[in-house]
Image (cartoon, rainbow over all chains, first blue to last red; front, side, top):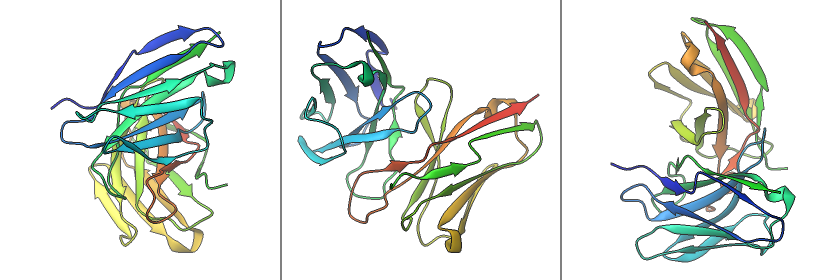
Length: 113
Length: 112
């Protein structure tokens, strides 16, 4: 049973560029959430997708957008990259509903130079 | 701020000792989850305790509730070097939302 998988694992981008990160949820899960984790901090909620729609969003600018596909996989897009966007981006999947356990992938390390 | 706070921020113990970490929030805590993160890796789910539970066990892990302090603690018994990691608590602080709020983490180092 595959867990949550993310790609790429590491990438380096230049300020102003755009990046797309990908996530496949754990088998049987229909809900995907994205988190940003800066070095030495706890993860910060970006948004959650369910039934191909953004269901809830954290305190992130519109430069952060996402998508969920019919097979429940998801993408996170970040436009006009800033140095401060350098972080570990974590995808988490769960069954829909509140209070369910969320399972994380290994993350994508983004470095903006 | 809704962010949870774990204390201590860092903890160093000898192998075989017990490690206790506390997680507190300014608001009421709903279901609480604990995660472990090895350096630079993803978060591994350890244990979920629901708001109506006072204590829960899973192997060498024990989670307890202190309602007066709005906190819950994670106890790791008979620690091993492999337990060295950062530990985070996470909760949904507003009923009916899907946004998990994570604490700042406790960095545990178990010395062999």
